Length: 104
Image 1 (cartoon, helix red, strand yellow):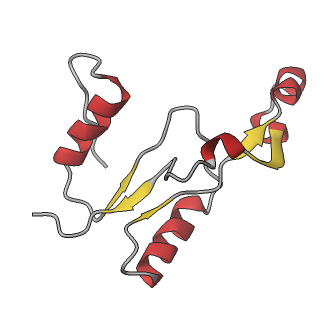
Image 2 (image 1 turned 90 degrees about the horizontal axis):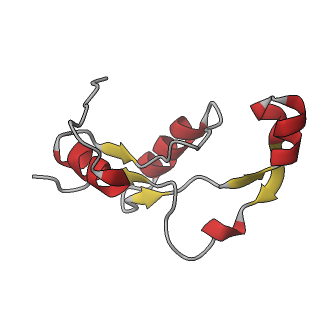
């Protein structure tokens, strides 16, 4: 793992674009700072991509949080729900995990 720090705030897209240019990994994860991944999430995404070599992008299921429970209990994991966040269900890949195919 390598820490790359920007001297100035280039925003979400600018930061990710820099990281994309400066890495040579097979996989690339775009992850907002307010996301919480279940322990096996990345392993499952990699497994799926490895089993489907023609697919280059996948997205985990985005679930809603119950913020009122978090405020009451101050426990992040107890505020998870079983409700899919349909704001992200718009036909594009969100919370995306990419296989970088054909990089030169």
